[in-house]
Amino acid sequence: MRFFCLAWFLAGLASEALAAQINFDFSKDAPGKMPPGFASLATGGGAPADWKVVEELVPPILAPLSDLARGTVAKHPVLSVASPDAPDGRWPVLFFTNELFSDFVLTTRFKISGGARSMAGVVLRARDQDNYYVVRASAEGNLLWYRVVDGKSYDMLGIGVRIPVPTNVWQELRVECSGSRTRCFLDGKLVIPPARAGAPTNDLAVNDTTFASGEIGFWTGPDSQSSFVDAVVQYTPKVAFAQVVMAEMKKRYPRLLGLKIYAGKEPGLPVLIGDLKGASLGAAGSKYDEDVIKRGSVYYLKDHDAVEVTLPLRDRNGDVVAALKTRMASFQGETQDTAVTRATIIKKAVEERMGSLQDLKE
Image 1 (cartoon, rainbow, N blue to C red):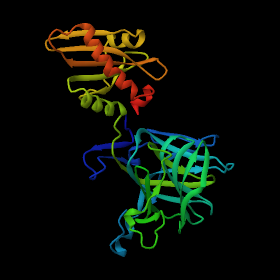
Image 2: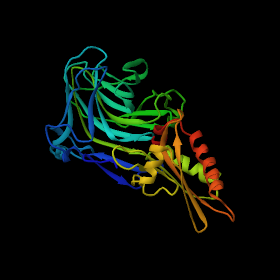
Image 3: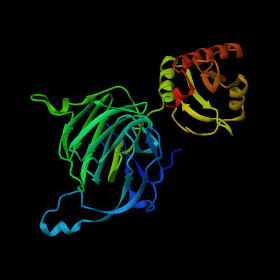
Image 4: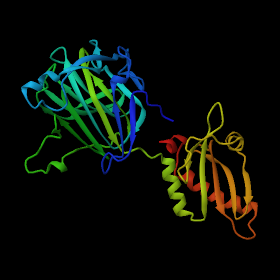
């Protein structure tokens, strides 16, 4: 079960396509420390930067209705980082590690301080600190989307636009990711990809298939002072591939009453990572499930009008990585051998859909 210290999770409809939301409320975190649920790393190696919660003057999200309301600017807890000067190719990143994201809308306000080359941005669909998408704003006056692959920044292959990015001014950055399409907005205006004459705004998007899912986070350049506040991500919760396989098996084998996958956990009993009914994911299995994984055993049980067979599930290398428990409607005269044969057919169908245990978990 994932643990949210910093972000509170709202189940419920955020929009027609995005069904969940995480708000990053830095007021709930200890000042002077990195928020829980995050990991500070550095692309290209080297020591990570010092990300921490501090208080800064922040204007309200909505513009004041009159000059009398301008006094509403007040101090609020924000996420801040001061990145030391570093060799080219080293970029401090801060990943939110409690969730993986595929399709989402990430919104945050950011502020760049420091020198003329200061930069700040967000990380999208990160596999690790050396592989991700980034959208970054520079005080030199540009906003750029590009890929980082194996620690190398492919900014020359990115898409960007010349646009004012003043220092010591809060601006809103919104990034929409859906499938292979990405769109970036600065202060509510679509800027990446740049508008083309005659092209409908809704049709404009950056198309790239390098990263399909991953973590999100914050990014800063060397010798930069960056701050972030009011960060929100609306997203479609990622369905584990094991659940996709469950639905496929039910469609192919209508006499299937139940199907569960238990994966090994050391130490302790294996846990449920796939369930035909979608219930109790994460629940502990039994010593019999553990025995199937450790010894490749086969277990058979018959009760009333159903049979239950638990078989070892193997990866592409032939190694047992999980236990597959099948429950099927039985027929008159069915024997243990015929039940195991039927369950083995389902087992092989599942193995054809996976290369490794990690495939089922992602």
